[in-house]
Length: 331
Image (cartoon, rainbow, N blue to C red; front, side):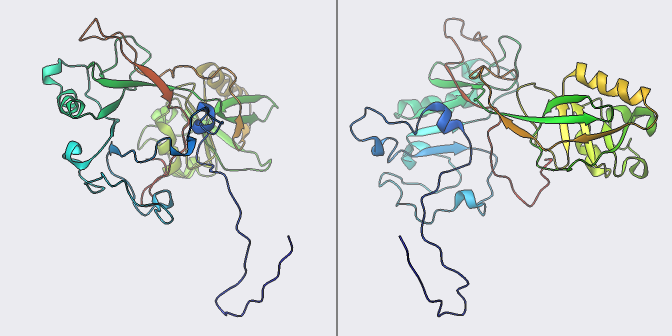
């Protein structure tokens, strides 16, 4: 279709035809098969008029993800407001999402989450509760009450790979959400005794900014990536905590397994002027998904042995989300 327009208003720079776009927030919807045609009578009504109450530590309302322009009116049964869910039952909530837990499983009569959600269940409200992130050891889930829908974390068919190219040509593959393109520029590689004695682990206060600035730092601890960033490092290589979960870091970074880390350190120690480049991450397909995440809390139920927990699993690895620009991405 051809069309033309005359821009008569001074504050109008250009005009574009309206187009239908696809959401790019995350792949979890596609992976679960929600966009596929269904056999339901009215698929457009699936999930309509469902009110979900989310208990969290707070959100940044100004984030574009929460923009409600073009949104329809809230369900007529909704009696509450979007803050302080002190009484979900009277607010008209259908589902409660709880992603908080106690430090360890406790008896039901002492579990405030289980007690509160028991009353919600009596009112016909389903409570979805995270199984926890204390895996892979057994009996680590704290979501043990039979009326809670306990959800373990599983992978999706997407991984974020970040490769490290060493000066000798060897390539080490790690994981991280790294959007920084170095475009073939190598940087000096340092580790351990290149700075203070505790610098190998990149402990707070142990990196000399004048030494690590504009260099790629090898850290023996994953916690060191934030310290390296604050010290002015150009990049960081660290051991990952979970092989199936990528960290978001505010500089070129790659989390590698310990065998790969040892190989990088060996190259560093045996080379007069070691250099490296951390490549921008690639999004690759994970044919093995879904698998239970290594960090996801496991059963069996340590409080009620006759009740199996967790109940189900859902995508919980490498899910993209918004964050507040008022703080550092490293937090």
